[in-house]
Image (cartoon, rainbow, N blue to C red; front, top):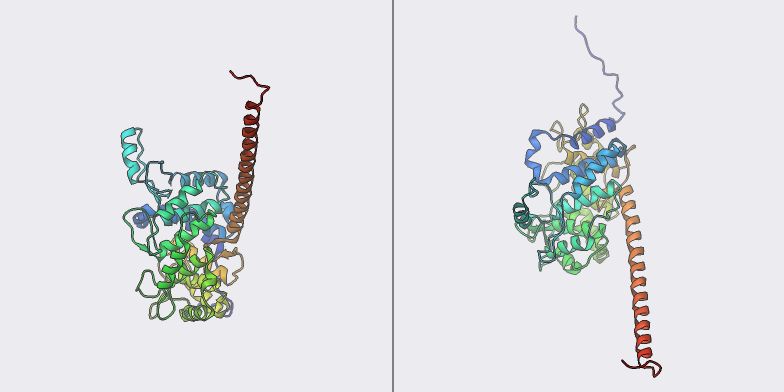
Length: 395
């Protein structure tokens, strides 16, 4: 006798997103990392970014206890580098704590300072994590960090990741723009040179390359467009150019999205391409159902998480960007995402509130400075008048 298993599921009903399992998956990465991720030790800040911001998009930040939230914030600030007056302008966040030896030896600590400098990608993700967790960023010296950003800008308008030992390309142009935008400060950064570098990276097919004379790529096209939007320069693209960029982006959809022509689709490009189209107000040109079907095909229904391809191992990077891709198509249960900053709209709203507070304080500081100058001038004038009076006897 043979037994046949009858599938009672409705084939027309779309497979659900296992939101709770994705939340548990990301929360797990805040406590323990698998051995296979040991090579990412120097970029721990990005893993924290994917986990925390992913929980935010999942509307599950409440799973992070108050104590853990405080620990994450303190750990993040532990990587902050604030240079002294006699040191290079290298402010920002480090990606790990390898350059912070656990010793009280003053000589060793002083020696290690030469190797402590901010990294643009780690600085971007660290500030994003702090904003997502509701921190007021009061422990940051915003001017010092932006000076560090300006210090790694090259004459051609591009940026390096750090002051030493780094390539310079579109990835770090994007990171520089996010940092300056989030800190509401562009002091010393040449935005026009940035624009010129971005436009020189526009290829014949109207995608943007990572570096000059490179191949157009979905990730760097997002970086270019987001940097233009965050720096207030997106309007400098003429209408014909925008339409041709949209065309290049839309053509990246097979079912999911690919990063380059003739390449396989990958979950992460549902964000990179999707966000780029959102910036250009062209996301509605895509096939939502096909996009969702591909992302769901990479979902691990047992332990949660998304992978780059079906039946591959899920990881925090593809999990977060897969969730963002689903958020763009309005997946129920997910919070909206601010495309160019790659954080939730709730975190972006918090940042805007901080900006208003900083601007108000700057206005008050300016008024107080002017008042002091006015009072000081009056007092000085009064002193001169009194001392020259014939009613005061000379000593």
